[in-house]
Length: 161
Image (cartoon, rainbow, N blue to C red; front, side, top):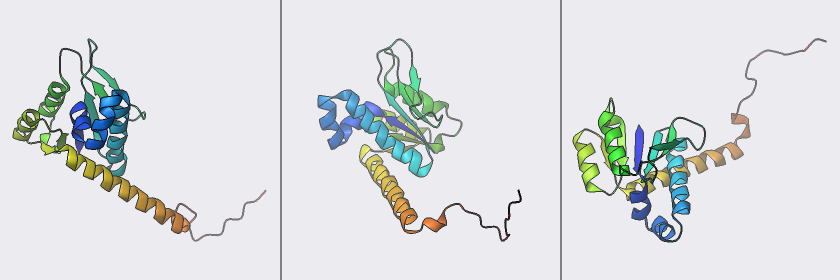
Protein backbone atom coordinates (compact mmCIF):
# COMPACT_ATOMS: atom_id res chain seq x y z
CA UNK A 1 0.00 0.00 0.00
CA UNK A 2 1.18 3.52 -0.80
CA UNK A 3 -0.40 6.22 1.37
CA UNK A 4 -0.51 9.73 -0.13
CA UNK A 5 -1.22 12.34 2.53
CA UNK A 6 -2.57 15.79 1.60
CA UNK A 7 -0.40 17.44 4.25
CA UNK A 8 -1.89 20.88 4.78
CA UNK A 9 -5.43 19.59 4.39
CA UNK A 10 -4.95 16.82 6.95
CA UNK A 11 -3.07 19.06 9.38
CA UNK A 12 -6.00 21.47 9.31
CA UNK A 13 -8.54 18.65 9.42
CA UNK A 14 -7.39 17.18 12.73
CA UNK A 15 -8.40 19.32 15.74
CA UNK A 16 -5.14 18.83 17.67
CA UNK A 17 -2.99 19.73 14.66
CA UNK A 18 -5.28 22.57 13.60
CA UNK A 19 -4.51 24.41 16.85
CA UNK A 20 -0.77 23.97 16.28
CA UNK A 21 -1.13 24.95 12.59
CA UNK A 22 -2.55 28.33 13.57
CA UNK A 23 0.50 29.06 15.77
CA UNK A 24 3.40 27.29 14.06
CA UNK A 25 2.97 25.64 10.66
CA UNK A 26 6.45 24.10 10.66
CA UNK A 27 5.73 22.38 13.99
CA UNK A 28 2.34 21.15 12.69
CA UNK A 29 4.04 19.75 9.59
CA UNK A 30 6.62 17.96 11.75
CA UNK A 31 3.88 16.47 13.94
CA UNK A 32 1.94 15.26 10.89
CA UNK A 33 5.06 13.71 9.38
CA UNK A 34 5.70 11.92 12.69
CA UNK A 35 2.14 10.62 12.66
CA UNK A 36 2.58 9.34 9.11
CA UNK A 37 5.79 7.62 10.16
CA UNK A 38 3.77 5.52 12.64
CA UNK A 39 1.90 4.03 9.67
CA UNK A 40 5.09 3.56 7.66
CA UNK A 41 6.88 1.81 10.50
CA UNK A 42 3.89 0.00 11.98
CA UNK A 43 2.43 -1.48 8.82
CA UNK A 44 5.45 -1.27 6.50
CA UNK A 45 3.50 0.83 4.03
CA UNK A 46 5.05 3.34 1.69
CA UNK A 47 4.06 6.87 2.74
CA UNK A 48 4.34 10.19 0.92
CA UNK A 49 3.26 13.41 2.64
CA UNK A 50 2.69 16.27 0.20
CA UNK A 51 2.54 19.95 1.16
CA UNK A 52 2.00 23.10 -0.87
CA UNK A 53 5.38 24.63 -1.65
CA UNK A 54 6.73 27.99 -2.67
CA UNK A 55 9.74 27.08 -4.78
CA UNK A 56 10.01 26.91 -8.55
CA UNK A 57 10.55 23.13 -8.52
CA UNK A 58 9.19 20.16 -6.64
CA UNK A 59 11.20 19.44 -3.49
CA UNK A 60 11.41 15.88 -2.18
CA UNK A 61 13.16 14.70 0.96
CA UNK A 62 13.56 11.35 2.69
CA UNK A 63 13.73 12.37 6.36
CA UNK A 64 14.72 8.94 7.67
CA UNK A 65 16.92 7.92 4.78
CA UNK A 66 14.53 5.32 3.35
CA UNK A 67 12.94 5.61 -0.07
CA UNK A 68 9.60 4.33 1.25
CA UNK A 69 8.94 7.52 3.24
CA UNK A 70 9.00 10.86 1.46
CA UNK A 71 7.99 14.44 2.15
CA UNK A 72 7.25 16.50 -0.93
CA UNK A 73 6.68 20.23 -1.34
CA UNK A 74 4.92 21.07 -4.60
CA UNK A 75 6.31 23.77 -6.88
CA UNK A 76 4.54 27.11 -6.49
CA UNK A 77 2.71 26.67 -9.79
CA UNK A 78 1.04 23.43 -8.59
CA UNK A 79 -0.97 22.62 -5.51
CA UNK A 80 -0.25 19.62 -3.33
CA UNK A 81 -3.61 18.30 -4.54
CA UNK A 82 -2.39 18.40 -8.15
CA UNK A 83 0.82 16.54 -7.24
CA UNK A 84 -1.15 13.88 -5.34
CA UNK A 85 -3.63 13.51 -8.18
CA UNK A 86 -0.84 13.08 -10.74
CA UNK A 87 0.92 10.51 -8.55
CA UNK A 88 -2.30 8.55 -8.07
CA UNK A 89 -3.33 8.66 -11.72
CA UNK A 90 0.14 7.65 -12.92
CA UNK A 91 0.32 4.68 -10.57
CA UNK A 92 0.58 1.31 -12.27
CA UNK A 93 -2.01 0.01 -9.78
CA UNK A 94 -4.22 2.75 -8.28
CA UNK A 95 -5.96 0.17 -6.09
CA UNK A 96 -2.71 0.05 -4.05
CA UNK A 97 -2.99 3.79 -3.33
CA UNK A 98 -4.74 5.26 -0.28
CA UNK A 99 -5.29 9.03 -0.46
CA UNK A 100 -5.73 10.85 2.84
CA UNK A 101 -7.57 14.16 2.52
CA UNK A 102 -10.81 15.95 3.26
CA UNK A 103 -10.80 17.58 -0.18
CA UNK A 104 -13.69 15.97 -2.04
CA UNK A 105 -12.44 16.92 -5.50
CA UNK A 106 -9.16 15.03 -5.13
CA UNK A 107 -10.88 12.14 -3.33
CA UNK A 108 -13.55 11.80 -6.04
CA UNK A 109 -10.97 11.96 -8.83
CA UNK A 110 -8.72 9.28 -7.37
CA UNK A 111 -11.58 7.11 -6.15
CA UNK A 112 -12.84 7.04 -9.76
CA UNK A 113 -9.38 5.84 -10.82
CA UNK A 114 -9.56 2.98 -8.31
CA UNK A 115 -7.66 4.41 -5.34
CA UNK A 116 -8.86 4.07 -1.78
CA UNK A 117 -9.77 7.28 -0.01
CA UNK A 118 -9.37 8.02 3.67
CA UNK A 119 -10.55 10.91 5.82
CA UNK A 120 -8.20 12.68 8.23
CA UNK A 121 -10.17 11.08 11.09
CA UNK A 122 -9.56 7.55 9.75
CA UNK A 123 -5.89 8.44 9.21
CA UNK A 124 -5.68 9.38 12.89
CA UNK A 125 -7.29 6.03 13.80
CA UNK A 126 -4.66 4.24 11.68
CA UNK A 127 -1.91 6.14 13.47
CA UNK A 128 -3.34 5.20 16.87
CA UNK A 129 -3.69 1.54 15.82
CA UNK A 130 -0.07 1.44 14.66
CA UNK A 131 1.12 3.14 17.83
CA UNK A 132 -0.90 0.70 19.97
CA UNK A 133 0.49 -2.30 18.07
CA UNK A 134 4.05 -1.01 18.47
CA UNK A 135 3.50 -0.45 22.20
CA UNK A 136 2.17 -3.99 22.62
CA UNK A 137 5.26 -5.37 20.86
CA UNK A 138 7.52 -3.38 23.17
CA UNK A 139 5.73 -4.73 26.27
CA UNK A 140 5.97 -8.29 24.91
CA UNK A 141 9.72 -7.90 24.32
CA UNK A 142 10.26 -6.61 27.86
CA UNK A 143 8.27 -9.48 29.36
CA UNK A 144 9.81 -12.14 27.11
CA UNK A 145 13.45 -11.23 26.58
CA UNK A 146 14.30 -14.78 25.53
CA UNK A 147 12.16 -14.47 22.40
CA UNK A 148 14.84 -12.46 20.61
CA UNK A 149 17.74 -13.65 18.54
CA UNK A 150 19.95 -16.29 20.00
CA UNK A 151 21.78 -19.48 19.24
CA UNK A 152 19.04 -22.03 18.74
CA UNK A 153 21.19 -24.65 17.08
CA UNK A 154 21.36 -27.88 18.99
CA UNK A 155 25.12 -28.12 18.86
CA UNK A 156 27.87 -27.62 21.38
CA UNK A 157 30.23 -24.80 20.49
CA UNK A 158 33.75 -25.20 21.89
CA UNK A 159 36.16 -22.69 20.47
CA UNK A 160 39.70 -23.95 20.06
CA UNK A 161 42.69 -21.70 20.49
